[in-house]
Image 1: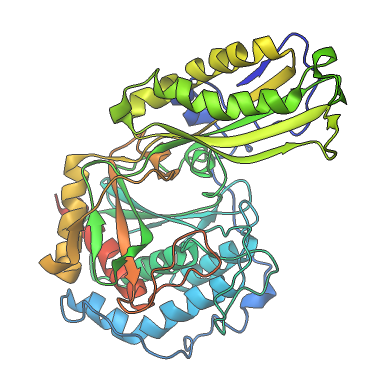
Image 2: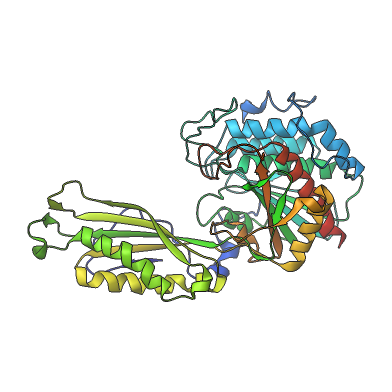
Amino acid sequence: MTTTSPHSRSAGGRLERVEADVLKSVPDAGRRDSSPIGDPTITDTRLDGLITPDGVTMADVEDLGAGRGPDWLDGWLERHAADIVAWRRHIHANPELARREYGTTELVVRHLRSLGLQPQVLPLGTGVVCDIGSGDKCVALRADMDALPITEATGLPYSSSVDGVAHACGHDAHTAILMAAGSALAAAPELPGRVRLVFQAAEEVMPGGALDAIAAGVLDGVDRIFGLHCDPRLPVGQVGVRVGAITSAADLLELRLTSPGGHTSRPHLTADLVHALGTVITNLPAVISRRVDPRSGTILVWGAVHAGEAANAVPEEGALLGTLRTADHDVWLKMESLVNPAVESLLAPTGVGFTLNYRRGVPPVVCDAESTAFLSAGVDAALGEDGLTSTEQSSGGEDFGWYLEHIPGAFARLGVWDGKGPQRDLHQGTFVLDERALLTGTRVMVHTALSALAA
């Protein structure tokens, strides 16, 4: 929602509006096409050397769950472990930003078609949905596909080939894992229902590509949905689960201020824009902290502030951007109604004009008990009881939460730390992962689907 003071000039670069009543707007959000799902068109010639009838030549990687069955899964992973690594490295070397994941979409579609499946590209041209098996019962497995506007600094031989773009959040691994899980499930002698693969675009931009996927109908007929995310704090071979909220809600604030400007020797004759920015920077977080339950884990952090060039000139324009996060779903729903009047009250005495763009982001990912039990059973079957661990709620946002506004589901944290080197955090150019996690993730996804379908 955008709030403007009566004396504000128009501010450019406004962020996309998300309706305040997000729960009611989600079913139609992002719809661009009258048909729910479009047909794929394969045009990416970069893939010709990767997808071949004989598979991909790549060094093997250790399977920490080898021998845990079922036999068809063990056999498939033994034959194709190197392929999973190759897929991930190809995606890693060719990262694509949100809603531009055309090459990654082509890779997924071509591979699934090679298995005799019928993948469908989502209406905006990126993202894929594909069903495996038959029957009324259906569970969905989701992976995100997009990269970040970050320069890679790992020095890996398969580092990003795109300047300023990198897979620094593990979405390359998520995509390869879901490709592998779908391939293994397609090779199963029989499934107790349907598994829907959801390869989702644009997780890294708010309010998230999940809204576009939902609008395209990916949840139609689905009973539950499951997903996972790389976690460099957990060692490879461990998977963290949690009943309740596992991530936090995250909204964006963009505040633009205007002033007549003037000389800093005469601030009383103008509106001191920099002082006004400072007032909001220091006081708005404090005001919010006194308006919500402190147990809700609500925090406002500013990420960017811009104003002026000269030391002796009051600037005419300024901007302030930040994120507002909360661990409580109910608090999230009322945050916009608290922030707008607070900003207006803080700025009223300063005389500046302002435009506040409050951009609704993502809800918290809230895992229900039954779905978490299925996920836990999947981890246990895939890795044994030592592979299952608890995890804390994160203050990070994840648009998987939008799916859970519609159907039950659960989300896991996949350990990717090798246990030896430094733990490189997500969203850093130095982020690396232990590729053994590709196989553990595949096993977890397959067993979770089987667990949920068998119930």
